[in-house]
Image 1 (tube, helix red, strand yellow):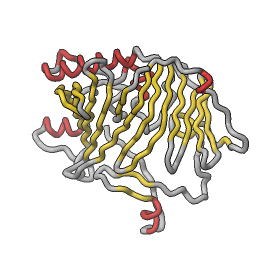
Image 2: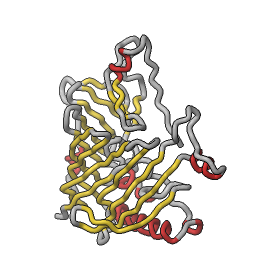
Image 3: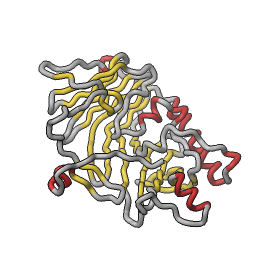
Image 4: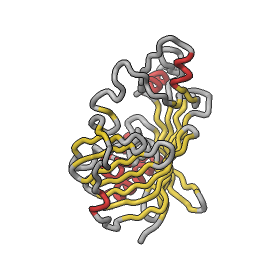
Length: 296
């Protein structure tokens, strides 16, 4: 049995193609080589089991995961809002025990349909050929650092929005249409020097002089290539559970809340590190319009 700990975070740094080494300096070329070794190590994994802890903007969620190629998965999320994601190879289920509700969709043959924001390193396991990469236009560097008494190769990838790059080319700082600084993102990959596995990734996203938003996912008690029993990936809805809508990687195929009903309360972090609560916003206005936007 192999036991270790593994930390990962940062979805946008996963699943993008590595930049051409011919157009980079020695520091970036060294970082690319280390990430290529990490990608090869991930590709050799047949299964992975661990406990995890996800942290984001002061919030923390714990759970357990079990993955097996090509498309088997079981993710148990604990805490105040527990959930279960299971792929048995044919169907993908997302179950909410508190509500006795579940969602389902056909499982993809390569496991890419398995999605959760709590574990962005899913792509590194099910799609290793395109994972752990440097986005086009990003800057990468490599250094060694001790973390919890162990020395790692640390690859740091700094990303900026395309409008930032254009603004710098014109000799001025680029800003969004409303005059706010365009968000910037930094991902740090802590890679084992002996096994080339990614043991830690820390993501920091900022949009100005503030501290920004930092998120990470911690995997402990890791077990690799233990050939888990396929029966551990079998699941069926418990008596009384109600199917709500098709689950497609976190995006419902139909509205989760019927038109005319009160929306459930929720909170989300802002780019400057604050927290917005829907119920508090609704108190200050007669109508609330919710818009999700994305830079890049």
